[in-house]
Amino acid sequence: MITDGMTPDQVMNKYKDDVNKLAGYLNWLEQKSGTPMTGIYGDDGLSEHSVAVPVYDSNLMNFIKAADSTSFMDRNYRYAYTRNHIRTAKDEIDFIDKATILQMDILGGILSNYVLGGRTKARLWSEGMNNGVFLHLVRKMKELIDFWANAERKEY
Picture 1 (tube, rainbow, N blue to C red):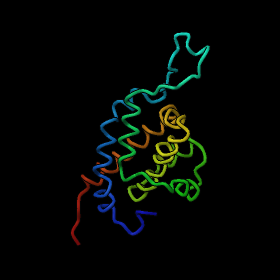
Picture 2 (cartoon, rainbow, N blue to C red):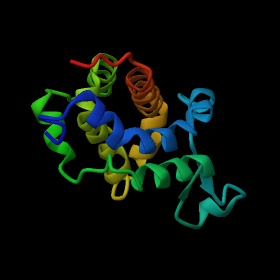
Picture 3 (cartoon, rainbow, N blue to C red):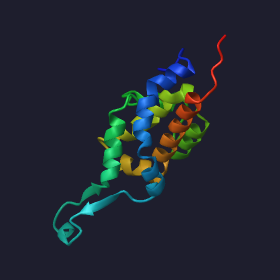
Picture 4 (cartoon, helix red, strand yellow):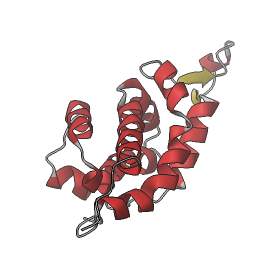
């Protein structure tokens, strides 16, 4: 795990800017979570004689692009799933809700599953919105960063 041996302050400093970048989408995620994010290009009768091409919401694509540019992206995201016995969207949300700041890299692994996995299986981007994983992730990441940024520091 990337955050092994790191203090909460070090984790916060490492991920703070990336979380703030994703938090800019929080209002949109709250409004649109659970709603369909795709349409079919050419619904005007073209689909009878052509291949249906999904068209994604532009805000979703901007969110995916922003997430892809963060330090959360981990090509080995499958290890986060196997180490933590995460198999379903419910397992993902349960883990997210219980996560601590020292598990921020695992939250990044869940985000990576949808963002990087969506490059080959684009339905994952829509699933991340429909099952609420994107909303839970960004909300929890922001909550953790805000908590540690405002925590009272004790000098020993």
